Length: 310
Length: 141
Image 1 (cartoon, rainbow over the protein chains, first blue to last red):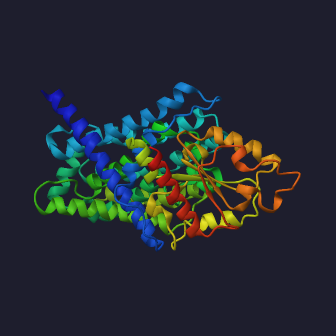
Image 2 (cartoon, each protein chain N blue to C red):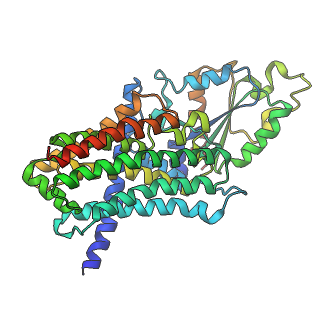
Image 3 (tube, chains in turn orange, brown):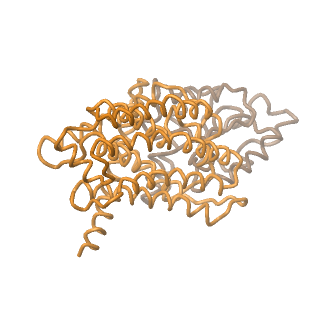
């Protein structure tokens, strides 16, 4: 019976609900971007229409590409996003199902979509895609260190637990972790790392359209491209969801807390959009310097504050 | 009409290719993306890679150098795709019609779905041309 329940969580929440919310969020992102630029923007169903259209197109495989890897890479990324969202949903909807170390599993799985993009970029055998993949690789190395450090803060503050359920439980009793000094700093670091994980401006050097023509995804077309786009769209829900769970009190279904959850999520998506619309693209070396310099320092300070219990 | 073709007409991503134009048509194409005209209302986006494109916007008079590249690019677009000829040069070769360097008009090299005349065509004309294209595909299917 428990297996059936997990499969239900996987299909209903891990895939369907996450995809729907992600598509809605990506529409909000495009619409807000358009309004910022005094444009009208796309209609509500545009992200869905884009996906349906891509499903009807040809999949071209370049002659120099490694065929299996080229087709398998998006599947790997997609599967890991589904796994993360299933873990997060299961945790939020039935708190007792949290297992020891699921925070570590989530942090690991959140790195896999970037890996799949690197694999796909190198497998496509295109020089521009290789440039994009190598930039993505540098970006991963740059933001993982502050991201993991920032994720340590809630662990320390909630009494050295690696279970997401316990972190949420601690926050229900003592208030959100973001309200403490260390937690607030770690939240800022995490939001900027999220921006880099989503490969949005200012950290979109791996897919810079104006210099390397879309970078890693340059050779992808048709359903495979649709899979990559769906993966990114779902990440637009999964990453803010993770941040809300770890720093901002998590998802609770009773009354006002559900409204608060929606507000927190919309706030995070709006923040991502505003950052993306008000910044120029950083060169990859500037991005690395930013993450290894100021961001790591801030994350270390946050960990220090957390160790002192602030 | 199939669902995917219908979706294609509602989200045509365009790839913009200059085969040796004077850049005036290209500027007018970019004008369509500006706040005044905003073709993202119709789901159109400028694609960075030819593999993401659904519509090929061709400007310019197809000289000997670019004609070969044009053919190669046309083979690389994932089908189904549509081709739009923008400006006088891409239709009749304009003032280059007697040039040694422009042996053939665009529609003798690849099949063209819609022609947008003008030197350069206004952004309004380009949008009207794309609307014509959508109606033509809808009528044919």
